[in-house]
Length: 433
Image 1 (cartoon, rainbow, N blue to C red):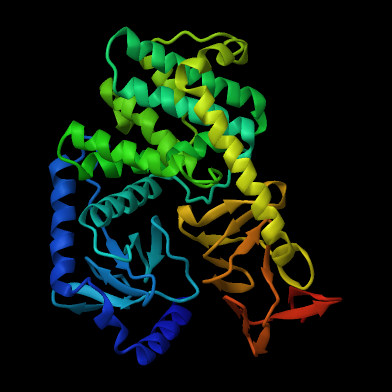
Image 2 (image 1 turned 135 degrees about the horizontal axis):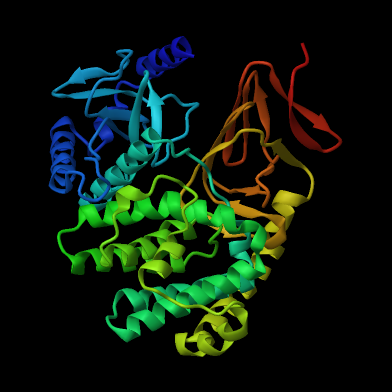
C-alpha cells in the first residue's frame, strides 16, 4: 500500500507543476494559520477535553489536492518547504474533515474552503484535530446517513426540538428548565416514532455534534460570539432540504452547549454511544412524561408550529417538482448502477437534495470503494437510502481502459474491475480470475 501511495504521488507531482501557484495558502499564510491554531489549542490546553488537541495536521486543497502540513509524515513522503511540509494527496483517497492516515502518520485532515476565511479555516482545523484526538482514544470514523430525518414527521419534531434548544440556551431560570423539558419531549416523540434508528442517531450526534461544539467554542473569544456562530450553524442546517447527513453536526452541539453551561466535565465522555440528551436531562433534573407524544402536540403550539408546517408543505411541493424533473435521469434507462461495498464519501452538506423513497441526490460527490473512485462534478448522482446503490446517467459514456467518463462524472476503476452492459444499463463487476 505504501509503495502504491508513493507511486501515485510521484505521478501527480510530475504533472502538476503550476497548480500550487493558484492557492491562497502560500507557505507564509500557512505558517500564520498553523501558529493561530496552535495558539487556540494552547489557550485551552486541555481544559475542555483533558488533553491539548494540537497535533499532526494537513490542509488539503480540493482542486489541486495539494497538502500543506505542520509536520512530516513517518515515511518521508511530504517534503519540507519554508518551515512547512508539502505534497499531493492521492486521487483515490477521499478528502473529509476527519482524521486520515498518510505516510504512516495519523493527521487531522482539513479541507480548504474555496475562498480564504479565517474563522472557517481555524474552526475546521479544530474540528479535524478533535476527530484526531477521539480516534486516538478509540472513536471509530463513520459515515452517517439517518434517512428517516428526511421524513416529514421526523423533520417536524426535529425543528421543534431545535427551537426549544435555541430558547433553552438563551434563557435562564425556570424558563430554561421548561425549554429543555420541551426539547426532550419533542426528541422523545421522534424516538417513539423511529425506534430502530435511536442508536445511529446518538452516535451521529455524539461524533459530529461534539466536534462542531468544540471547534466553535475554541475558535471564538466570548460566549456571545460562541452563541452567534452556533446559531449561524443552526440556521444554515435548518435551511437544508435534507437532514439525513447534516442534522447531527448541530444537534449534538446544542446539547453539548447546555452541558457546558452546567459545568460538565467533557473528559468523562469515553464512548460514542453516550446520549448527550440523557446527560442534559440528568444535569438539569428534568422530568418527562412516560409517553412523549401524549403532550408533544399541545406544547408544539408554543414553538411556531404553524410556520414549521408551512415550511414543510413548501418542501413537499418542491420535492414533488424535483421528482418529476429528475426521476428520468436517474431511474429510466440507460443508467450506470454502482453497488457500494465499503464506501467513503466526500461531499458538501448543502449539495444534498432528497427524492423521498427514491434516495438522495448529491449535486457533487466523490466516492471511493473497492471498485475504484467516482467523481461527480456536474449533474448529480442518486444514492439509495440504504447506502447500497448509486446511480449516474449513462449519457455520453465513453471507456478508455480503466477510465470511464460520462456527462458530468469520471470513474477510475481499480485493477480486476470492469464496466459491463446488461440490456440498456451498465454495471460495475469484478473480473473473475
